[in-house]
Image: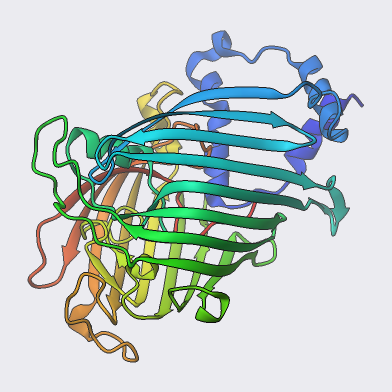
Length: 438
């Protein structure tokens, strides 16, 4: 048996991870179905054999070569930095890791930003364990310099957020400045992800410096929530575990900053989350997700929990609510792309439909300066926010094969709630936690 035939046999024998993985995998035959014989796959036997040899010899023929250099621009825009102009340079060599340096100028506050980051990954070859392959990888990262950070520790700024801020002024995230050093170490297998992080950084507030945008609209959020000034010595641990071979995950994360370590700020932050990917035959997948968080520490907006936006409750404006306690549950139903097969759409348009519902609340001390509510009691019934909605999803395949460009319309449910909201964003179906490798 040739190496390509062996690789094909192993692929066909492998069980599908989930309903979502199954119907996404069905896209592989869409070219043949649409174009017929003119879209037949080319003979790639020699390439398959080369790939099989390379996978069997890590660090071998596929990975040899000199140090690679990758220059790239570093640009951005938001209401606190205004336009950011800069450049980055990455030098990488497989045995040594990758070193990334960047330098940029923020025209709004007249600040130079930048620094360096070193990343090194290593691991061991797959091995047979209980009938399926396992592997473990390690990733170490050290970063130092001055960078902008986002106030919500559970979210990251996206390219679409930068575009929305520049074009329409719909910039809802809140920002701070961080000067210092942080380091992390992550170990990941197909069923377990463990991480350890430490940082010594000065957190500083930032003011709004850019009230303009391309369409000359008034910014939807005219202020930036000020971070509490102070040097933070923080230690964080996290873990994500897959429940056996089922497509379900549980994640827990905790962060501590203590005056005994020389930190100006003192807090303990705990977050747990769970998610699953449940198949409904070959036509759809059900994605339940839930998260809960608790912060012990007062007047620290950069450690608080926030509610609203694409990865939270989509009927609530992004980051419009905050507190020291948070609870959120969401349920998404995603259909297979084969639903549109009768329309004979081109394979370049892998689209599907979705429906969702959610419920969530934040309580405790309000980082926006509101009266807040008792921390040790669950919110009253009328303080829980409920929504339902529908989605149109497009899966481009890049940069993440599991990522979707989503067009969502969310309706708030309950008396006194506002009108529905439309959101456009890019995310994975599971976005309240980081699932382990598949």
